[in-house]
Length: 142
Figure (spheres, rainbow, N blue to C red):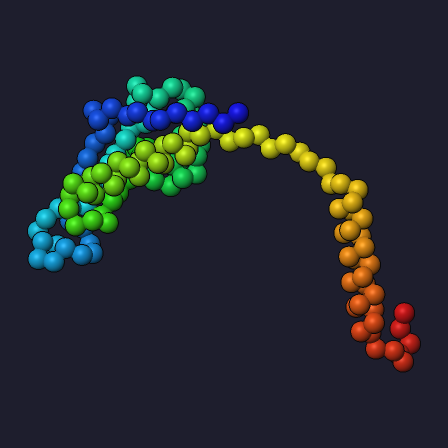
């Protein structure tokens, strides 16, 4: 069963780092630090259970954003202001955590129907006759 809960990470467990951002910014681009990086140490987090930490550690999207210390680091530099980038980075982190913590449904194996198998074989038979009609005759080939 798919259970998802709203991930509530305390602000004390998040570290924010600011740096100069590339992209638009006009005269401020070289002097204002608008790029925001949110770092979350999920291994030491008290908000997550051991099972959730294990699931995060195995998720490919989480593995892609781990830094050298094993922390989740999400960056945002899409906006011109630091405040909007801070909101954007935290939003990206929450989206990532929610998608990684969502349990995948078990796949239920299905069987092909008699009708679908018959249609597939009939289609193959029609295709065979179409292609066999394209062969050149007159050679000693089978």
